Image (tube, rainbow, N blue to C red; front, side, top):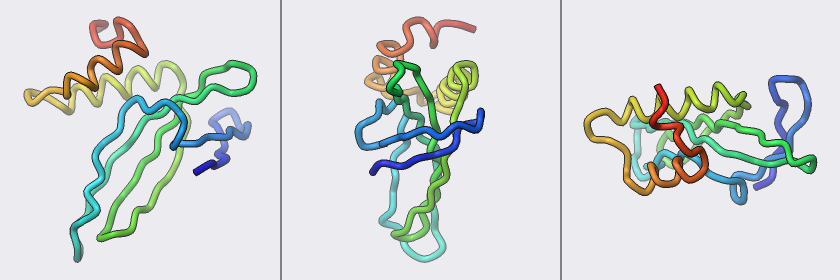
Length: 114
């Protein structure tokens, strides 16, 4: 699903969550009914025609079987903080080892930095 969003610098950015690199994706449980809802944020990486990396977040809320989404771009520093916050929220349960490996492969040493 291709989309065009406005980046923080005011420029337009073409994205496609179906093909862009997914960095962090939260599970979407949309089988609930009534007033129950789930929400989360997914982080993606896209590379433009000039080989510039762009990070964006899809914030979503699922109510019943419908999902509402909003989009925003992140700087390198905001991306790093987003990942660190995601790791922190995982707490004692921790992240799935596959997620940790994926983050380490994309950004070596990021999870070890303080």
